[in-house]
Image (cartoon, rainbow, N blue to C red):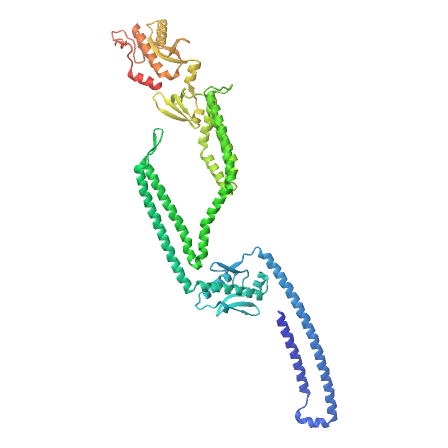
Length: 615
């Protein structure tokens, strides 16, 4: 119950008490018609006197009770005021504690933030109250004949309304005043001043002369934009004509040594592309600058123009400031790159000298030089990236770090096979199972090594077929190095010959050794030797073995050995038997070759072509 209600109740109680006393006195008085008889009767006069004294005492008692009641009412009023003040202070402290975490609802008109509303009222939340107040202000601001000074304030016991005509612009309560840190009267006065100023602005914006001025400015801007775009287009066509004249007079082909990099047609095309790009960029800049002008013409969208300009200028300014602030880091990155580049050149020089055997290190092979250099260079680059990374823009950003981790994860998952080949290539390099130019044998593949990369090894077969073999396959399979065997020990070639038992084995031995020594590429030291591998039913199998030092000529040596064996055996009249022939003495013709040998110096042209390709 409020203080005002209590006070009214007490006054009503006092009035009712006095009225009751008066009625009691009136009821005890006799009628007027009997006054004369009462006067003459002394007994009645005495009785009346006694009653009057009693009435005086009752009236005095009533006055004392009234004074006591007034004192009690005053004490009660003071207690109520004190309690109300304490309750208000407690409520204010509670609101202050909520102020930091409560988002105010702004009353916004034409992008102008007027005042805030925190509390709900009349079943409406703060945001809805602010929205309705904004709508009412805009509605009143568009009225014809608007008089902003006619805004007035109407208050009652519970709220204060700020009104224009029949429109309630906003209603304020004691809670709104507490949130604002003031009284309801002071809050309503300040809000009224704000609303009057805003209505004056709306009146000016919606005036007839403002509309005419806006239309004129808009037409001027459109005319200027059309003229500027026409001038840009005209300049573009003039530039195209000048480029065409340059292509006929001033432009010449660009060469690097004897390689033509850019001919006149390509230069002309590039210049035309640059001209088109310039026209596009200039036109885009003009349009971007004209859009804010369009919005600035209309007063309601004037702030939108400022926002659009800030959208273009703020990123450019931020980028420019970021570049300026990044210059020290950029200089640091430049120094790191220069130092790493110098170290790389020194290491490359040392590696080249080691690979050419001009610089020798005990226990370090020349063919290790360049692979070792590549490994060190990779580690050097990784170290440089680790040093440069903290100086990169955005390196501390969580997004940047997340992308880096994601890319690393994708690379590590998707390149497991490739990494396996790289590791195998490194192991092969330092195991030295073969070198470039060596002839090797792999399962289903034989040829000369022509290239070794971190991932694969390429082999050229005797038929000039290029075979690419993954390093991981070479690592996991058997590799035969024919060149290394030939150079260190002498590679043994062999050929099996089937000869009848009618010829003495020692004679066959001598003829096979003679044929081997007559073969080009076969060395005398170690000397060729012959083995008997099989004693068949009709013939014996002799195997001639000879040493060669050049494994790259292996197919040619085998071919020459077979030719030499045929020549020697034909000369001696000895048949070479095979499982398809048997020696009979029933008059059938011999298997000896009766065709005369070709003239000296005449060679097979296909063989000569193969030898030149191998070399």
